[in-house]
Amino acid sequence: MMIKPYKDLTLHGQSRRLRVMAIQALKHYDINVARLSLITNDFNAIYRVDSTSGEKFILRVTLPEGGHNKETIEAEVTWLDALSKETNLSVPQPFPSRNGQYALEISTEGVPEPRWCAIFRWMPGVNLADHLNAENVTKLGSLMAHLHNHAAKFKPDNTHQVPHFDRVFPFPEPVILFDEAYKDIFPASRKEILLQAIAWAEHAIKILIESGEPMRIIHADLHQWNVRIFHEKLSPIDFEDLMWGWPVQDIGTTLFYFLNETYEEMYQAFKVGYSSVSPWPERYPGEIESFIAARSVGLVNFILNDPNPNWRNQIPEFIKKNEIRLQKLLEKRFLD
Image 1: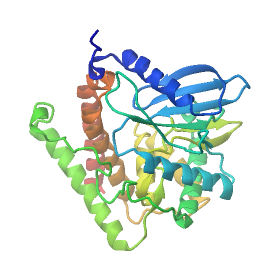
Image 2: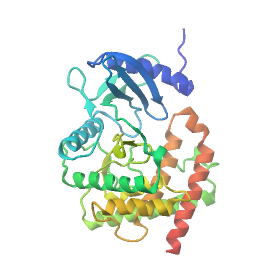
Image 3: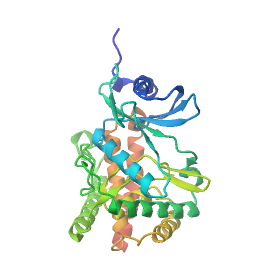
Image 4: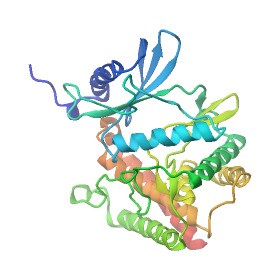
């Protein structure tokens, strides 16, 4: 019997095949599994693992996109281990396999390529997105500053495959924004907005490079769905997209997700929290907004590359929304 190609499956169908992969991975761990529950398959497949002893874990089946591999997972594990030992921050604890490995390459029939699997202990609480207010965004700013302060002294080995944010598109996925296949999605006016945003971010990166400030490891994805809140304390999760970069880039990525009617309030709340721990790193007005713009164009390129069938259906609406965001950012820049 012919097996239907993975790319032609619905998201639910893909998740069923990835569950088989997750079960295979779990055989390599000293965990007596009572229950395996899918949390999301929007990008990576993320499963909650409940053990018979009552312990809880997260199992991540990594989509082989964006340069995620054994080395980047090991860099993630190394930073999490250092943060847990050298700070008071509450971070996910990586859980090793029976052989002491933190990244396992698993293959299974019906999934076209091997995938790296990793397990972390469960972080209690709920997503910060469910309790988003100025007080908690101030805490988020403080949390990021603590991460940056630790990263300034953190010098991991063997990270040459970890992305560097010394270009607008730091991940190794192809930049296909202006490919012929998408010419109908990007009319001249929209293309011009994207090109202006890219040039703006490129100029900001050039200034950072010329400043001489060394890069440090940054989380690079610290939005409100990647932070847990438990007993009023914030815990960062999902360090998979960590990269070498500068604090202002990390801040821009986070603030991108506050681009709504409360942006100015959230920006100020975040800045207050950050500045209570470390000096605000923005060198000139608009520097952080240039990296908000970089996040926007990066996500547009990402959604064009991503194989998720549900997301692909959202491409026109998603790109229109980001065009509006970029237009407002650019107008503010020119007004300033």
